[in-house]
Length: 80
Ligand SMILES: [Zn+2]
Image (cartoon, rainbow, N blue to C red; front, top):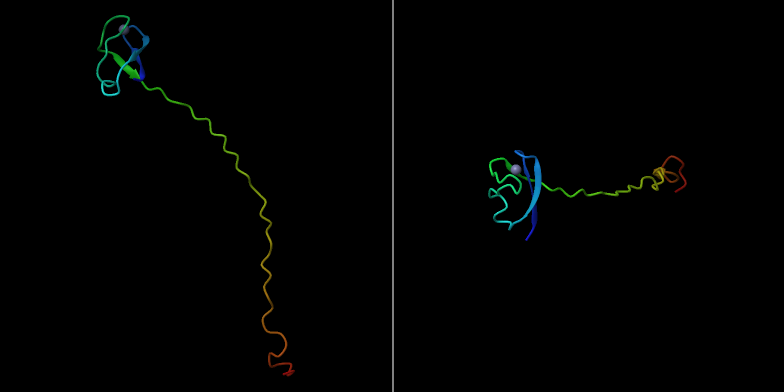
């Protein structure tokens, strides 16, 4: 059963309550003042520290060696 954090804006008190997930959104009374009108469930976020190391470079830009078209026996030299 998860523990939810609630915050009462009336008495500015943050308290925890052990509730089921089904009754998490149901109103809960404040543990300090007993009020239930301004008790909001605080959203607990988990900070995910991503260590993304991106490696750049490494790709040598090799020029595309274009083969010379034609050559000998093209008709102009008359070797064939
Ligand atoms: Zn309160």
